Image (cartoon, rainbow, N blue to C red; front, side):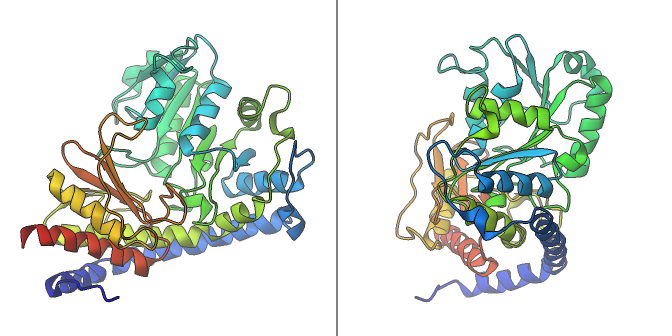
Length: 410
């Protein structure tokens, strides 16, 4: 099959790639440094093929599970980590952490505005066992609020929550240095506040991680950056040992914690995934940088701009109307290796307030380290694009989306 792109689009793509030359070089250098860091973690922790052996049942004395935890702790600069295939999503891992460290009467304070849609039910749903039902209070500050002006609220909180990525908003995502400043100011006001960072989409985009910025817990999904396109499911919680112990007892049972849980032979793919993750993340970042440049040249606003520092995977592209948004997602789907023949439709996806359209022709369902695009069907009709296991194929998907939009106006 030949991809029949308009000649004007091809010329625009060539111009976009030229604009991206310096940014691509920066991304490759970050990948090199992170690749060395991950390799050191494997060597320091003496990983061997014996750690790939499967266990079943209770999984007592599973050396693969213990070694995987140790590698993740080293990679993310933490005292301890829980990395498990039975975290079904980033939201699940975050929920586990929140229920692990919060108690009735405690206050959870979001420092970065309203959290991602799927976490809202965990926090304040009226049924199903939310934090609200357990008597845990919640408050949030607008993104970018002056922390000193909200000192009384910060003094009262048990957990100060930071969402690194923009979610379905057009706000900026947070760099590790910005997170470090937020942590510093928060701890100055309340030294006992537990800082929890949702690190989804941010892993390996910089050469440091939130634990290096003194965050108490860092949390993410293995079907995003740290799984490297290999891990088929799972998540991680990394941070202070006393806190990861509490999270582990929430994940399993009080008194069991990290001491049980079979791995069913999945340690190999999880470890291989994190080993590949710096390179795969670089490919995904290059794909979204190219998309930013291409669509900016086409007259659209993108967040961030192609030349801005990249601190996480997604780019938001403001398309302006429903038809273009749907056309974009259908173009991404048609340029995917799996289910390319499918045509995405908006639907009422569980956990979201509005109909959502998603394009994800991925080897792993829901994997957003693979090229994907999604958006709620609401103003300003922006689409969030992320992923790309290889830059070459990611570029084709982006061109396919651009061609679909071009076809609307021809």
